[in-house]
Length: 316
Image 1 (cartoon, rainbow, N blue to C red):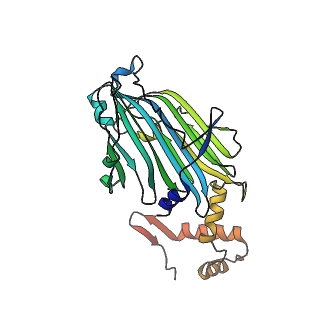
Image 2 (spheres, rainbow, N blue to C red):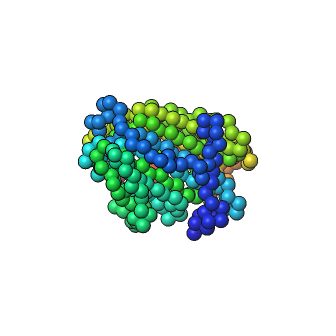
Image 3 (cartoon, helix red, strand yellow):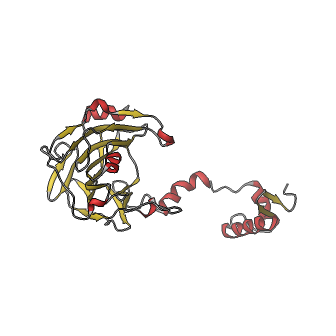
């Protein structure tokens, strides 16, 4: 509910630095007068070909709500055969309970240039589809062989410290673009995997803008007993620092441990441990010797097996 209210109150607007121009959600758009686009020689063998795949992830500060994430996807594909029609005539958008689909549009263009736009009434919601959570789903009318299909949508999410975007699938991708935009005080660590370029930061007056582009990503097919998804071209990102608070790596091991330790270790030794140390003639103030003594005691007096843990002697 909070996110829905924010959309009404503040609207959905963001700016990115792209090819030395400031673009925003209100003016980032597909071509208003679409043209039919064919495929390059050699791509006809695939069911379909992704001509353009653009992902934009923006972190935006909303007064009274903190940092909200706006994720936009824009995909344009060419259809080669009946299998391609089946793969592209429906779009599934995963939507968690705390997320909101702010904008969605789609259209098809046949080989004669006829454009069929999405009827917003066709957008339906499916709850917990095959145990994978909630989805928004819609069918795109007019999808046919040798035609194009295009869709674009924006999902509004609560703050997330990390994420990834996968670009490679069972069809080739001619052009892929990734943008991450964040306020100047939020810095991110990003990495491209399996051939996808690692994003670089571009200069902007108001934001940190990370950009990566790739061309001609090959199709990859799933094989039996293979870890298919982990081998796909993708870009991963995580929050590195909030420079308003500290320059430390907030997701690094040292920072994570420092946040977890107070809830795990209070600094007080239990009565049982003090009794054990006293029995072995070790001062409880000597942390190093205390740790070594406890380690030796556990390894000497307990056996770990498939049935559980058994003690070699009475520990009372």
